[in-house]
Image (tube, rainbow, N blue to C red; front, side):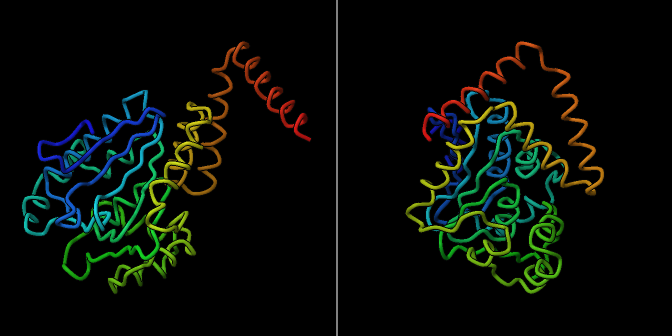
Length: 264
């Protein structure tokens, strides 16, 4: 592992195929987050975004939990710190990361852990995993987007129930509601996540980055403005292409078509 914090609580491993694995590594405390861990996690995503050898990031937790939230024994340090500083905010840095982020969830994703999961682009969860929002239970005001993101994904009524009652949302229910992409056996969690990552890596990297950006940026707009955004970026993309790039694109498509025909 490289890019470690001094206590090795945030681990980063760059794999040879363009995939990076980020692990929250405090299993004895169910991967609860201290202020230094949050800063390290934020900086890890900032570095991975800049690293041209990395094309997809997988985020997971060690042991039996993804992330059980903020370590409340250091709550004052966390909540009275510079919460508006984007450099030390892991969710902000995840949202700024151009690379697709796959969350591999096992055990619990609680409160801040839930919010970090929501900052991922794709979620794979082990059977029996649970998502839980305890802001209302413990009197913690949320600041990483859970109040807005969850309702967009699962609907306002269900989001209100989950958050206001602090009721756990199982991975199986989360999959039915569209929050989780795949629910699998825990032993297959990283294997499945890597399969998805490998499928993304095989595609045109520039278009993958642009596609993620237009989806995520469009989610912040109403449908009409989001469709206009897609049109604008399409025009910019094609206007920026050279004749040589168009020729290579046509050759690639023709090559794929001929391979399909030969298999028939």
